[in-house]
Image (cartoon, rainbow over all chains, first blue to last red; front, side):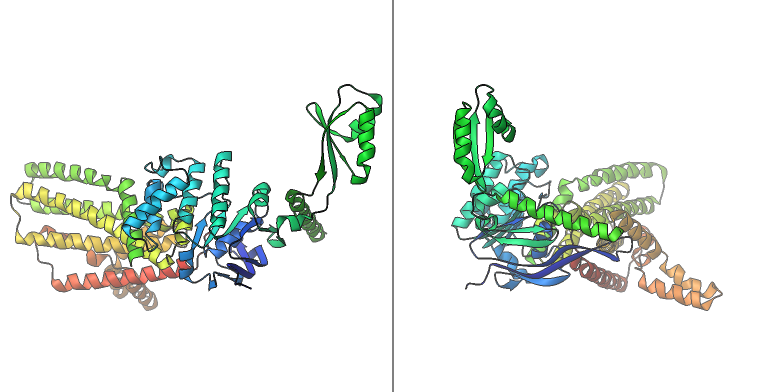
Length: 320
Length: 258
């Protein structure tokens, strides 16, 4: 089997706190996972779960308490590794006295480009992230979404083999999010490895070959989104309208949820026909019947709630 | 070293765009006003007054820039998180520190050179000539630059492990203490407790000796400054800066950027 593009082994990070910094808070615990070459990997978790900590450890912005990681076969302490890596920090901020073109030119100087190549790459990137016309404006006049685009441009400027994006959709409007999604898909098409953190689950479901879910600093599951949530249907959902209030429909209406003039009724697969007959008898107009599958969101929320329950139990034991 | 140069040039560009060099306009006004006034009220001591005033202004303005911008060189990048994307590039942390130091040193050199040109213009205005003895003024300016480089290195060191406000206080405190190094050494004879005298003497050798860089009196009176002192001060500043920056690099290389 080919060597993973990102190979993380027992990565642990403690942050000291308190006046004398003697107490320690564990932010990441024994994280072991691999991201294969050419795959889009989504790193999911609620705020404070340890996503950014992991990414900062990989980028050597912080140092691990224990464990190790390799990217493209090189240990993360090897500076040469950074030639093949692109990184978008969370809520990126750049030198606001520079224009977008100048920032990109500055970052390009750390790679082995000639002056002509630099100019060409900068123009290409500005075009790719939709900042062609704003490239000569100082960044202090940029919106959060525009800064995010600059961040994305600098991450892929040098055509890296591995791209690590920390919350790439954050602060973007729907158009911007769509553009970022397209860029990630394009990177995948080019055979790049993409690791991105997010808490927007629809993005992960749409883009990722595999996802890793991290909660409370611990990895809770890794796999393809469909594998994680399971493929078995959880029931059926009937969408219907009911022109008048009919006595026989009361019981059904009590179980349904209403959105405007329409009702959603969720029933067991085995009870579908009986429910349809009762709706027909009540004079309901059935608009659609769909299979209900568990979503990544439900899987995610179950993990988060389990973690919260465990934390609460620990707290109760500690106070006793 | 190309990467150090890239960081340095960007630091210089930041200083220019943040209008740091606007202080030159203030300095020009001071020099013009003093040249005109001195020409009217002092007889025979124009050179002393102009040189003393000019060198003092160059030193004070340079010190303000060194301390306040020096402290922000690293801390501002961390606070604003501009450093995150930068350190993900093939750039070592020591290259970043050296680049930032070199960038501010370049800014100070340009600033000091421009102010020195103003000082010589004012001198020429009151004396109507430039003499060979005026080279002492150039040496004094060079010593100010060495002193400023040392202050920048100290400011960067402190900003690597403490808050900007504390870093300013530490740098300023060390600068002031460094102006009294000779007094600390001489105090030994007058103190009763020999242990305290020994301690002060020891501290005086560790502290940066800023007194050695002050040749304002000699420059104002047109006295020759020896080549030996120039070589000594150059070597001292270079070694001290290297040592301070090495400690700054060692601290910054271990620092977690939260």
